[in-house]
Amino acid sequence: MRRSGVPHVGVMLLAAGLTLRCGDVNAALGQLAEARRLAADLRIEFTKATDASNRAVMADTDDVSIADAREADAAKRSVHTDMDALGPLLQRLGYADESRLLQDFAARFAEYESLDRRIMDLAVENTNLKAQRLSFGPAQQAADEFANALGSVEAAGDPWRVKAHAATAVAAVREIQALQAPHIAEPEDTSMMRLEGRMTAAETVARDALEALGPLARPASRPKIATATTALDTFMSVNAQIIALSHRNTNVRSLALSLDQKRKLTAPCDNTLRDLQAALDKHGYPGGPHPGGR
Image 1 (cartoon, rainbow, N blue to C red):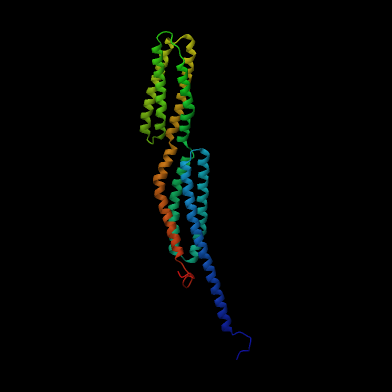
Image 2 (tube, rainbow, N blue to C red; image 1 turned 90 degrees about the horizontal axis):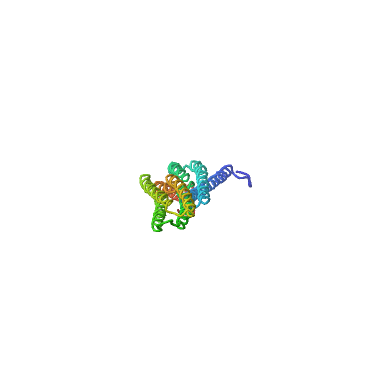
């Protein structure tokens, strides 16, 4: 018979075992809760990355585009942080299916990141937007100066011939202006070249008309023709910049990639994360049913 007040060795061992099991269960529950949190945060950060990337593509200023691109990069770094923490945790829990889903996402995300980097590099250049600003700004100003200068030229003889040549020159410059917008929006180089051919022909018309005005204008109006010539040179110089920027086509290309290839990568990534969350939610109380009945 054991002495009163002294616990039996078997009871002590049983109590110790229960304590250890309770500790193991609590640790497992804590790890499961952390895995669920990381999986949820992983999906949130991936969504943030895709949203910020889309905003960078659609931004209408360099500053906004760059800020959105940086936000996308920060969210992608958070995705990597969550993946790095979640992978070992799933292994410790022995969740093979969930580990496979995470690996599937990592492979898809690597492909997404590679494409998104190309898109961001194009988007922040904003060459189409810069071409558009040149068209609406310096090009418009030079074209207006050209038209204003020719509008004040006085004829030495037949005023109608002067007016006709001036109108022809102005119309040719306005035609080039009108062609700038479709050139900026055009995604194909072949179509751009056709538009440039029309621009070149219009420039020839403008310069020929301008040259024909010289002998017909009063001497006092010849400085106006010189001013118009300078304005035309400026206009064509700006037009050349517009064409060069337009050919880079970074906004058009980034938008096309975002709407097509990126969209095809985004959905599988998100679906895999959704499946990962659902798989983790199915796990219950270690060694028995979930306390909530699942």
